[in-house]
Length: 378
Image (cartoon, rainbow, N blue to C red; front, top):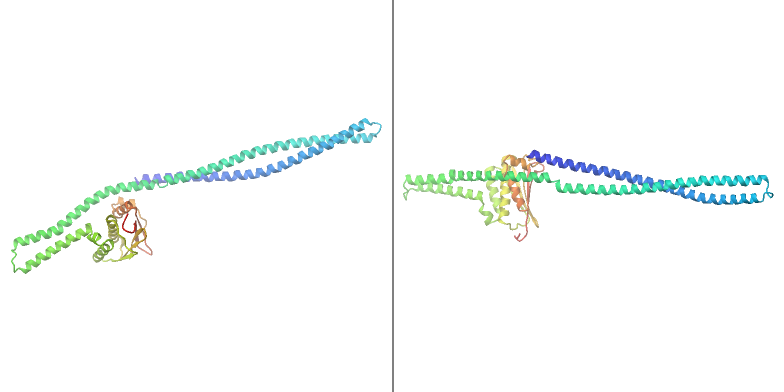
């Protein structure tokens, strides 16, 4: 299943990369198109000016040609008034101007056609540039949409897969906890009570048998202590009686005694009232963190800080051990390491969070955050 999730994530990333490449190509097309528009506008303005100059030249040449023809008509009418050379000059001038006029008219027609062609191309190119810009914007919207909708799909699927696997593992863990509890009751209090009962049955309890009385008293105190410890592990009474901080200090003191690891608990800010579920969630998470520290961290010291902010409780558990590297929640669940994963889910149900990371300069840091409201109301 993990392979399929990874394959899906790779396919999504490949699709998003392809769309992004397409967007970049369209962006290049837009840039080139607007460059062509700019060059074409310059050419259009140049041809337009040439066309205007040609039109002005045609009008000027028409005036000169008209006067030359009028002069030629006048010379032809006064044939005896002008010499042969004057008549020849008038004819050649009128003919030259007529030829020049024809050339300029042809030039004007060519420039008009060129100008109109450039205007059509410029209009079409501008439309293409605007359409390309629109396409580029659409590419951007599609990329943003797909990134938003599907970018975290694989993570969502993996989270769902993790939660499903956690559900199965939690069922097994509950059965294991019941078995351990039954074993502790059987091997501890029940054995002690059975031994005490046999001792009382075998040896009559005389008023002056102080040794037997003391032995029975010690056995019963041991049973009571074992039962109290089991009750404390199931749900510390101090959580309900005195609150989170005293319960944590009591537990960490006991834990430090039999683990030989120094523990310091620091309170920052003013403690506020938490709901029973919130207190138990934080307590169990710290408990699980210390369990992992003892099993894996090879640490000699643990610092626990509880920071009560305006609207958030932040708990940091930092050890000086070997560190944990990158957190791999799914792999941990697959390997049956459910403790912190279950704690993370419980915090998530309370709109909180749990992160595991390397501490500096060494060790592991577990950070819990939980939203709170001052005054004890939610």
